[in-house]
Image 1 (spheres, protein in one colour):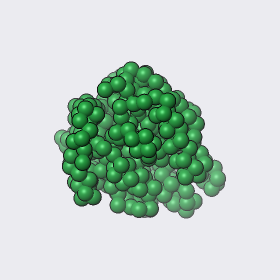
Image 2: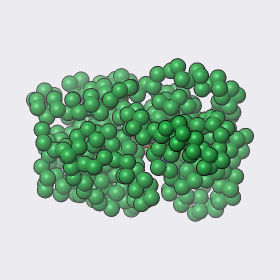
Image 3: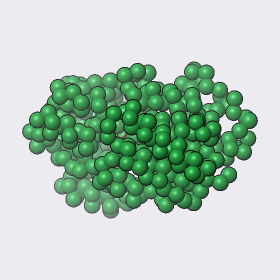
Image 4: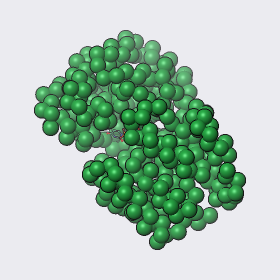
Length: 366
Ligand code: UD1
C-alpha cells in the first residue's frame, strides 16, 4: 500500500483522525475542507496533529449545506485526481465526511468509514443521513462498539464489510491528556477547584438556533448551584449576540474554545459535564466523569444509565445535574470501576490492519 487519504473538516474529526495520521505518517495525505472555519479553533487542534505526508487545505466553511457539500466533493475529487491513493478514510458524520465518501466512490477508490454504525434514528438530524449514506458507500465500516455493528447488520450491510475496532477517541485522549501538574495549573488559572465546578458545551443547531431553546438551556446552566465553565463555540456566540441573550452569559464562566489538552483537564476535574457534543459523551467514559446530555436523541446509547443521562432542554437539566452533585466523590469512585464502552488500547492499529487487508484483497468485500 502507498498512500492513504484522510478527509476531514471539523475539530472533532481532526482530533479523532490524529491517531491514524500518526500511525500512517508520511503515507497519510490529509484533505481538510475547512468546514469549521473558525481559525482559533482550527489552529488549536491542528498543532497537535502529527505531520502527514501531504496536507491539502481548503476554506469551504459557511454557506448553505448543499453548496458546502458540492464544493467539498469537488475539492476532494481534484485531490484524488492529482494524487492517486490506495484508500480514502472518513470519520463520523459531517458534511466533509459525506463529501469524502462521495468523491472516493466517484473515483472508485476503496472507502473506509471510521466511527461507522452510530444511529440516533432521528431523521431530523442531518448527521443521521450522513452516517447512513457513508456506511452504505463504505467498503470497510469500522464500528466502535458491538451495538454499532448490530445497527449495520440490521440494515443489511454485509458482515464482511464490518470490523469492531473501538473508537480512536480513547487513544487521542490518552495522547493529549496533560500531566496531573499541568491539569492543576489549568484549573488554578481559572480559579477552579477539583470537583467544585461544572463544564458545559452547547452548539448543536437543535439547542442554539431557536431563541427560546437557547434561553432555556443557558438559563438552566446559570441557575446551577456551582460555577459553570462554558467554552463558547463560535456558533453559540453568534446566536447569543443575535438573540440578545448576553445577560445570561454573565452568570457563567465563559471561555474561548480551548485547546484539546486544556479542555480535557477541565472535564477531568469537573463534578459534572453538561453537553450536546458527540465526542464528549465518549470522552467522559474514559475520564470517568458524569455527563448530562442535552439533546432530543443520542447516537451513543452505550453510556446511558452509567456515565450519561439524556434530557431535553428544560427544567430536567438542572434536576439531573443536581442528582450527580448529591455525592460527587461517591459517583467518582463508582464510575472509575466502569470500563469505557469505546474500547482500550489502539483502535487505530485495528483500523489500519483492517484497511491493509481491504486494500490487499478487495475481492473479499461483498
Ligand atoms: C460531531 C458528531 C460526532 C462525530 C464528529 C466527527 C454529532 C452529535 N456529533 O462531533 O458524532 O464523531 O462530529 O465526525 O453528530 N473540545 C475541545 N475544546 C473545547 C470544546 C471541545 O478540544 O473547547 C473537544 C472535545 O474534547 C471533543 C471535541 O472537541 O473531542 C468535540 O467537538 P464537537 O464540536 O462537540 O463535535 P462532536 O459533537 O463531538
